[in-house]
Image 1 (cartoon, rainbow, N blue to C red):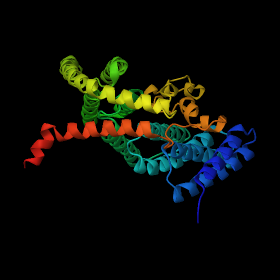
Image 2 (cartoon, rainbow, N blue to C red; image 1 turned 135 degrees about the vertical axis):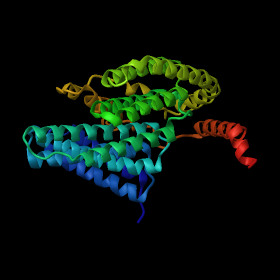
Image 3 (cartoon, rainbow, N blue to C red; image 1 turned 90 degrees about the vertical axis):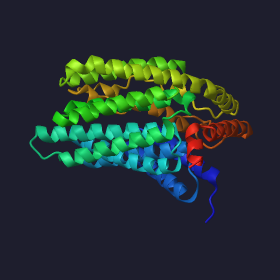
Image 4 (cartoon, helix red, strand yellow; image 1 turned 45 degrees about the vertical axis):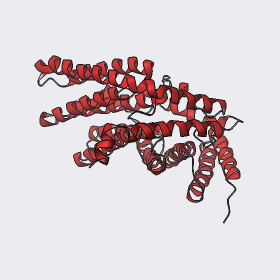
Length: 371
């Protein structure tokens, strides 16, 4: 069976426009159903772009939330249950996307924020269940979910958090900040022998962050966030408080050394990254990074006893700017849609060749080759 890719994408955009413009829940669910089915069919028969995968996940989430809300009513417990189930569907789609586009920083960020929000909803459900005397999540389930998010952060660091995304520092920095929030949330419930492993993970996070070229603006923001995470972790962990200053001094000395070494790498990468940005901008496919700026989200002002749990809730205002833009505009969105031309291709190839030469000339590579 043959497929016209452009017609498929246009049909998907038409369903999305109808869904997001609908005022009736029934009309909206119907439009999302048709759009998600088209995305599902497209993913089976044609290559999907990172943006299409994210729209697929986002629309699937909206569809599931709408269906469950229509069936179960609008009370608070059902609303949280609907959100949790919808996020399960969303993250499932994004896991398929990451298997295909593991080098897309924005895709990693959307997945991590969605999975963190899933944990937020699980904890909210558990708190509601305990308040009315019913059984909530077992501790085993909690540990398994936390371990899965920890693994997802590790995968993100391997794929996008180690150096070649300097001009995407705003995206990579959001991943680091979210990881810090997650570790603070885990630290809050940690007891006894669980405390030190979490503190060690926080130290590892700082070392990785300081090893990553971020650009001048990213460096300043990085140190502010590191200070906040460290101060918060010390406030949550009273055990061994007397040794915190010495530990901080040693950790900060290592961070300073890493930043100095990283600045040399940043100077090498910057010209290639800027060249690629210029090429992508001239071809109209550069991701508008200002879309990631944090705007206040009304849904974030829910009363929450634990601010570190609240920080895991996804800011949908930010993602709506990115993922609904294609449905609200008559002009198709061009970033992350595989639309690069000759200039971008040449810039990317020059960058890749430079990295290949740098790797081949590195002492570690030469040491392996001589074995």
